[in-house]
Length: 403
Image (cartoon, rainbow, N blue to C red; front, top):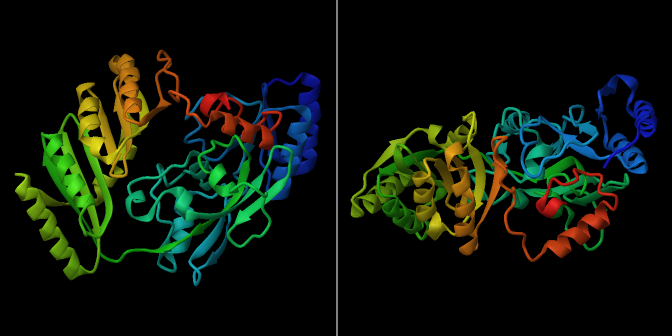
């Protein structure tokens, strides 16, 4: 979507009136604005919508390359929406603004021994809004569920400036839609999130990590399924694969004497398969983020059944790549540029087994379509987009099917 220079100037003037001149920046064809409240966000979107100007909400920018990224003419920064507004520790809930960093939120909750049980990427700088918009979660998902299970409410501004609140302590909602679940993972294409209400958990006092290494990922796959079928108090469970072989990481949470019993049980399960379990540090749980530190190559997110984790971990290694797969069947993988063409074949294999593969980052010379085969629900998804954003000004082209 484009806007002529007259409209751009008129919109810029309107933004300065809404947010203040010092919070509007113009660099070439790009305009940036930093509203300080939900009301200002609503006024900004109302103005942008009236001029047909495409808008991208921007937190730290850590995941802006994900999806079908296209540059909008107006960047709406959330850097003035950074407050932890409520922490009702007795009810184990909190409300936090979208521009707050994940680490700042967790530090505030730590005062009462609580946390949002999620381990997103780049927690030191990733913002609440970006994490929710991309539905990012790590290994803690095994015990505590996905982000959609932890979000209990949200304030959203729709493309026309309408403010909608859902769930949590708020009462107003848009009839017919479970808004905060719709917004989680929508890549900012349905509305701009201004605050989020989370359910909280107590920080576990006693945890330990165990690692099992093997060159035969099939054995680790068998052990993984046995653990999933056991009564162990597992907090995290993942399989790593790459040039150094394959590893199964297990995190347990329980009282100290129970932890010892459960560690012994894991050791016995491993020994029956001819494997050796040993105590591990917590560094293994950062392996997913480490995949993003590589300067080049293709980075992708894949989904699969837990029973297929061993097979596809081996497939990634055959491509010269590395992967980290949560036991729920969510894999993050990195393969070298030389294997770019094989990524498409890997996607076909995954889709044949009812999985998926989404490109998160690829070199400029690679042209892999980000999303893969479109689901049967695309007509419904397009209808929802049309209902929420008729002019398609919010992150146009970013999401599945060019939504």
